[in-house]
Image 1: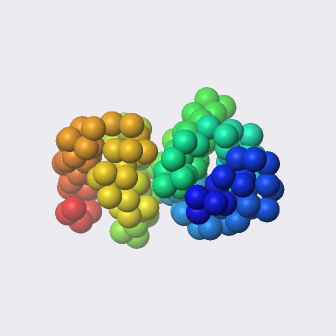
Image 2 (image 1 turned 90 degrees about the vertical axis):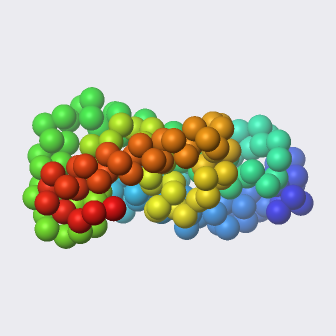
Length: 171
């Protein structure tokens, strides 16, 4: 991967394409976890590919390329969610209510996660939907591992409380 990243930084489009292709499924999972729509997730991959191509020279350590790429995706998704919320809060509320009313456990869990504040949502998504370690999350979010552990603990406590209110299952 070091060689591919080095080549991509020098302008080799094929090397860049190989790097993106090797991380595409992870990017898709992150986008889908945030945006909850397949088409929007695919659009997110296109946008993140473009953004990362423009800024590839900023990657310092090859071993952090996937983390860097994931961070770009998270930022893009967060911006999209803010944009959607700003333009259609009524639609968002209707969608949230519909999700909560569904009986499916995954949908109930997603709705409970949506209640959390954004940084706690991010921790849950990275830990349980992306299978990232505490250390990887800390690196990605540029926070100490102790802070990530505290946030994860806080997020899980709030999820438990939210799921108990909904009569759902216990985390």
